[in-house]
Amino acid sequence: MPIDTNKLNPSLNNRVQVRKAAVQNESTSQPKAANDAPRPVKGDSVQLTAQAQQLQRMQTRMSLMSDVDHDKVSGIKQAIAEGRYKIDAESLAKNIASFESELNALYKDKNDNRVD
Image (cartoon, rainbow, N blue to C red; front, side, top):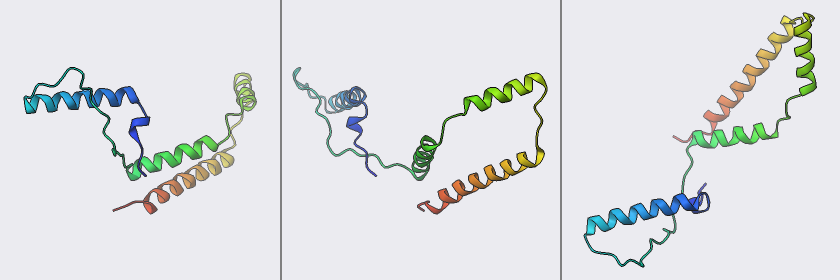
């Protein structure tokens, strides 16, 4: 998926192009007119690696997830402070297994989309 880098950070692209022009001028030893400004190079593109694509998919998934339930967090904090919070080992084990399953699915997704 090509990305037009000229739209990402124009000032950075301009600095890179100025540096490229300076290096080219030094190597050719030809004086350049003062009004000749470096011109943007057309056709530049970026290809994302499989890992970068996976990170992009993960970011999309995370953005779709719901936010933190602040009321629940406050309730748990209060219960801990008051000594009322009890850990349900069975529920914790199920949650850990579910988390591991989700990680495994992400890993499988990564390997399924790998380009060798």
